[in-house]
Length: 499
Ligand code: AMP
Ligand code: MG
Image: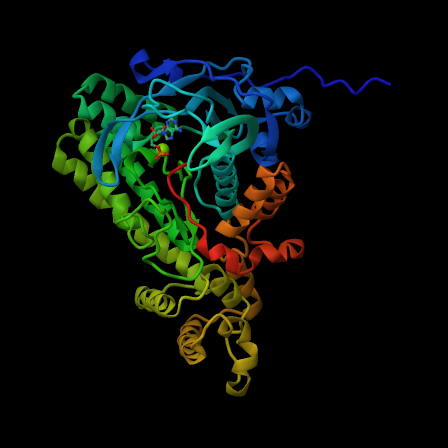
């Protein structure tokens, strides 16, 4: 009997909007092929967003196309130019050194651009190899989808394709390509690029492109560019608040890694907070701790000032541009952060003292360093009232996260007193808290287990971890182990920019 035939591919039509910009914005070029491409993992959620037929995903042509070996019909591959500030210092021209934008497509769910990361050298590779290793590609893939599951704005990831080609980092690894999907990949640094070269026309064209493609509502404003800057500042404030609420640390918040659409972009040495320490440095290469958890809100504002400076000629001056950031960013961050923390703490309605209580809670976490995710998840199940004689038993799941149990008891007393001020039936509050406090985040040790198996040729753990992380707020008893504290062997895990 013949194998069932794969029906002819019917892919949605391409709409290469970025490629319609003048040639100065990018270089058209083909991805470089990789030997023996193999599907490592695929996100069905993202395939659905794109309208890709399920039978396509496991076909040999899928691996060929998303390794960069065959052209996706209708695509027009290009690498975009941008510049940026890295670790607070102007770095000059950067650009897509290992990313190929295939183009975009539009459907009833939105506008989606598709980008290969790791598909070979481009004119912006600056001496590097244009490749990405399997390890970092799996991390980017899993974290993109984990963040989407958590409800954090992010670029998405369709798949990882591995190949037999060696890639040289601290040791020899193998090449992989991760396919990213987002409405757009324009960065703060895309604007800094033209501003730094005094190229007013291109700056104008890029701003018009972003407004017309993504933010047409800005056209109604007296100054659409001022409206765009305010929009970016507001979304960035909301984004950083989401990061802080789930304990996410980006690790490399350079201006070239900041999305103009307010999405989490460029997953490298990121981390999720485990034993709470606001000063935690997740990027081994961040020697001075610029991108610690606690610094993220300040750094985002600093990055927005860079964007404001780049846009000043369009906004009508340097001061008005910075003012646009000042008027929107802090307010958006604080409002969103307080809303998310109230939800995490089970506070039904806001009270004027909540900011102080939230601050006190973070100081308490800092002093006693419980696991950030487990702390809030376990808190979610505790009752609002408890007989004094029963606290040790009732509160045990939370108390067990602390060496100093008396300190935990004291904080719980404060928490319960606050709950009593805005009463809420336990069952309802607990359900709301469980929907605000994830059980599963992409802990480094989980990624590491999946990566080690994948490097040995078994990709099943990547797909299994993905199926857990796409629903991080659900109990999923079959994945109970993934909610555990990091094992002893994981304490020495380090991640750096080398990807
Ligand atoms: P990142 O720190 O990953 O955001 O990268 C900063 C810049 O270096 C970007 O322009 C990247 O495209 C480029 N880059 C990073 N790794 C590579 C690589 N292996 N090959 C070419 N370019 C790279
Ligand atoms: Mg980058």
